[in-house]
Length: 415
Image 1: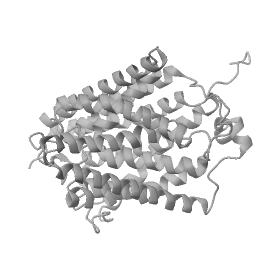
Image 2: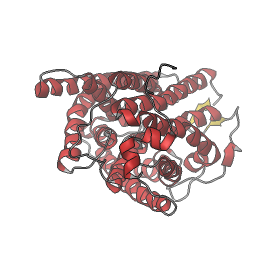
Image 3: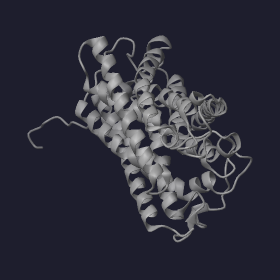
C-alpha cells in the first residue's frame, strides 16, 4: 500500500497531542501535591521527556516493534532507527510512514513512566527515580508493548487479547508499578496525622484539560489513519470521559452535598483511563456505561487502597490508572464487537466468553509482569543508591532539597 500523506499527517498530529499529555500530567500532579513539592512533581514528568525520547530512538522502538523473541520482546535490528526509512510504510499501519509510527509510539513511552511518579510523590530521591525509570522502560515497558502490540507478541497475536490504546501497556503497568513502589518506599512523614491539602486547584484543572485534549490523539490516533475507526474512538473517548466526570460529581454530592472541581477532574481521568483499551472495539452507547461505571469503581478503589490497606499512593496513580485500566480491559471483554473492529471477537454481552477470558488473562499477566519487573528494577537501583530522601529533606520539601528551587519564592522587594 502506498503511504498516505493524509494518514501520516493525522498520526503526526496525534503524536503531538499525546506529547502534551506528559507536561499536562506534570501540572495535574503538581497541583494535587504539596506546595513544597510542586517543582519536583513537574520535574518528574519533564526529565522523562528527554530520557524517554533518547531511549526510544536508540533501543525502545526496536525492542518493542522489531522482530520477535519468544513473544516477549523484539530485537535490536533497528537499533538507533537504522532500519527505519522516511518513505517506508510502517508494518503496523501500511498507509503511514514508518517514522510517523515511531514518533507516535515514542509519546506513549513518555507518558507511561510519568504516571508512576504520582504514587511516590514527596519522598523518592530524584537520582533514584531517574535510574528507576531508565531500567523500568527496558525491563517492563518495552517488553509489554511488544507482547500486546508487537508482531508475534504473546498477549496480542498469541492470546488474542486486545488493547486499543494502552489499557495494559500504559495504565495497568504504570499503576501496578506505582503501587509496588509506594509500598516499598513507605508512607510520607506524618501521613497518619497530617492533613494533606491540594495546593493549587487551577493547576489540577489545567492538567486535566491538557490530558483530555491530548487523549484524543492517544485514542483516536491509535487507529493509525484518518478514518472511520478514528472517528469512532474519538466519540467513545468523549462520552466515556463525560460519564466518568458526571458519576464522580454525583458521588461527591451524595457524600459531601457539594460538587468539587477536584472531583470533576479526577472523574475525567477515570473515564479516560477506562475507555482507553476499548475505544476502538466497543459500541458508542457502551462507552457511556464504561465511563459512568469507572467513576465509582475508581472512587471506592482509592478508598480501599488508602483507608483499608493503608498504602500511601500519594496522588492516586494506582487508584485511577491501575484500577481504571483493569476495569476498562474487562469492559472491553464485555462489550467488544467484531463489527467495529475485526481484531476482536464478540464480548460477554453477546453471549460469548472467549474475548472476556482473553482480556482477564492478559490483565493478570500484565499485573504480575509489572510487579516482578518493578522489584527487579528496585533491586538494581538499590545497588548504588537509596530510594528515599532523608527525613530532613522530606520535611523541607523536595523542591529545595532535590532541585534547589522554590516554586513560590518569598517576596523580597527586589523581585
